[in-house]
Amino acid sequence: MPTRTNEQWLADLQSEGPIRDAALEDLRVVIAKGLPYALSRWVSPSEPQFEFLVEEVTQESLLRILNRLHTFEGRSQFTTWAHKVAIRIALSELRRKRWRDSSLEELVENEDAPAPESLLEDSSASPETSVERADMMTRVRRIIAEELTDRQREALMLLSVQNMPMEEAAVKLKTNRNALYKLLHDARLRLKRRLSLEGLSAQEVLTAFETG
Image 1 (cartoon, helix red, strand yellow):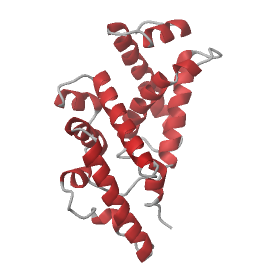
Image 2 (spheres, helix red, strand yellow):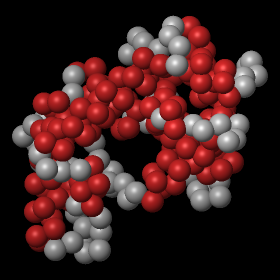
Image 3 (cartoon, rainbow, N blue to C red):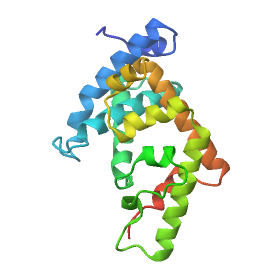
Image 4 (tube, rainbow, N blue to C red):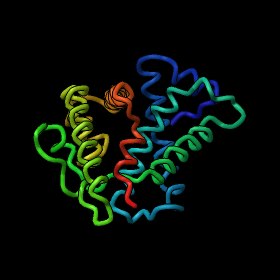
């Protein structure tokens, strides 16, 4: 991996073609190597989802960094700044209460199917809360089916449901890692935009499934 100055990182990531692809891959390696040590302070590497979390955060970090290159002020090494971005995303992901075991495949492929019971069952939930969750899942399923292309849904299912590593997902979809980043980025933007149009935010959807 070539050693880059801050200026070279910025120039390469803002360029086009092979130069940008190489810089993205190098940055991915830098982030993926540093994240496990940082995350081990909050979650054990032996946890089943640890490796997937590292992959997911690395992917999200690359997208966030590309979108915020203009905010880098050069007061530290670019890679140090990139690691800080990745750690903030990781902590946010760890704080966020994930939905319990769910099947995106069920939600997307069968419009009329009820939401998976594991999403709705909660001994501490009131009847009103259970109804709210069922309604929310119906809306989310409809939005995913209407807004995402078949390819976007397949990519989302491979990475978020089947926990397939990025490289394997790219091979299965007959694409490359960078194109897959872009595919997922576009899918998330479309979902966020549609949620906004319906008066919802991603956080509101997640909050509907918080226990207690």
